[in-house]
Amino acid sequence: MSLSIKKNIRKSSVGPKILVVVGPTASGKSNLAVSLAKTFNGEVVSADSRQVYRGLDIGTGKVTARETAGIPHHLLNVASPRRAYDAAKYQKKASDAITDIVSRGKLPIIAGGSGFWVNSLVDSIAFPDVTPDIALRKNLSKKSTDELFRILKQLDPRRAKTIDRKNSRRLIRAIEITKTIGIVPPLKKTKPSYKPLFIGIALPLETLKTRIATRTNAMLRRGLIAEVRHLRESGISAARLRELGFEYALPAEYLNGTLTRDELEERLNTETYRYAKRQMTWFRRDSRIIWISGAHTAFRETRKFLAPLQSP
Image (cartoon, rainbow, N blue to C red; front, side, top):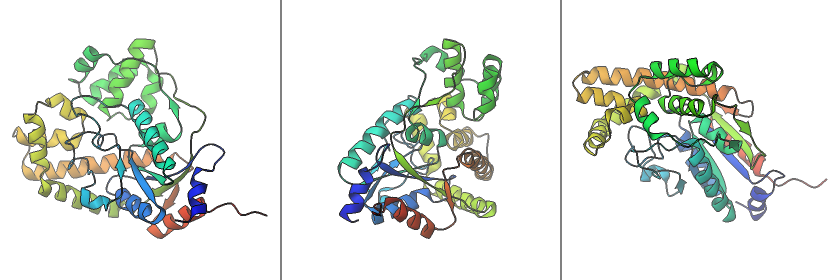
């Protein structure tokens, strides 16, 4: 990358330029982010709400050391799976990582499928100042997502209309906030800290289904069941495994004898596809995203984004 482009990363009326790569699970975000980082002297900041946890590797599709290809990755393996790591904590740590990356003349590349986390970082969302209620969380963690959604709907119908009703962590946090201050206040964007370029990976549904099936099979062959067994043996409760997502809850059911191996794979495929559709529903609402079907478009748009302004 030329010196003029390096300087241009820092130059922006609202803050440093950052690249944001989004898309559904199994779409190839991680590979694209690494390729872009190699070409444009970048480092990757993960925006995945579960890849922050140590020991959640196979089930979350976390990049391996080989897949990083020597590109530094930030916000991976920074928290214990025993305790929830929320978007507010992520926002602070990821902001610090971006500051560090930019200070070294490199391009921050945000990559992930957790849309809320992406927006919390890029749009500098201000979060309600509500202290976690450990006792309440422990009680709510025993309930299904349907039960949690019904509770939230009774407490705050407005928030219930916009929340991901299958995300237990977010449901519990919304209930916690509602019980503390009455309602979940609308999240407000503060003054933008960055100038982002959003690149979104769009795949035909049948292609996505095929990739998901391939990914699921690979996860099982790599040892997903053993990963879940290890988490249980290390003291992670069944309730906490459910909070960590279906990739951990379903193998736990298999280990309990309530699912066969074939049923496990089928359920994983079904739930992953449903999750991917929810991800796309979230991302499609953001008009800033440039949707691509090939990497060449991502490289072209990034070059334009980073090119120094031409003098008249």
